Amino acid sequence: MKIFFDVDGVIIEGWHAKPERRKPWDTTLEQDLGISREGLRLALFSPPKPGAEPRISACARGETDLKDTLAVLLPDLGYAGSIDAFVGYWFRKDSNLNQDVLDIVKSLGQCEDVELYLATSQEHHRAAYLWNDLGLKNLFDDIFYSARLGALKDNTDFFARINAQLEIASSERPLFFDDTDEVVATARKAGWDAHVFDRIEDLAQNPRLRRVLGTENT
Image (cartoon, rainbow, N blue to C red; front, side, top):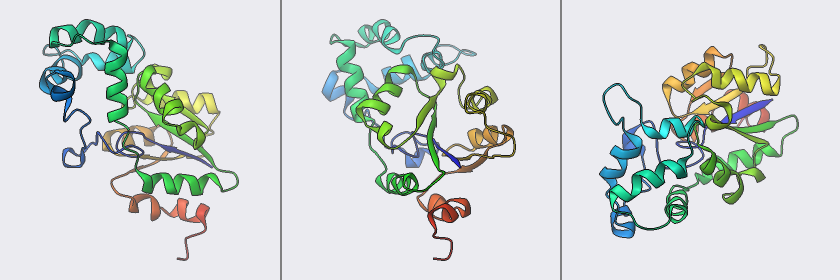
């Protein structure tokens, strides 16, 4: 049985589809690095003009390199430090692991015939940080991320390419948890058994997970 988890909003408590659930990584950005939070949001995470997409989107599809993009943007925001130092600060601050979710992941990892994967929109540098530095490689079999696949999670190509790489049959219905309704709907179009994750009960009470973990009668 293949089980997939999103990262942000599921494995990591930071960005969440619901604004009231978000735990921003950049709360002390201006005090720490002298960079305006709003300035960074407008420069990297918001469309630079009507009809355009945020610059981070091209990074997340693997079309541009995050560090190259930041090297152009950050000096105009008053930052004079190294790009690597900024990226390290960002990634460390945005690494608040959801231990309740990880406890279930660890239990699933002890079950026979279970394969655990991450399915997430990430650019190359943060994906490597999550996998190696944060140690998610010790819990999951692989990380499928948007820059690697060349498509964001709101695109059916994202899931179709995972289906192809893992040779997932149409009858297999891999289980997937994500915090975004639109992504869940897109995954379902690709034949996945996708569910919106909001709280730990969404995992603990899922019938398929309960059968795997042997908790269906508890």
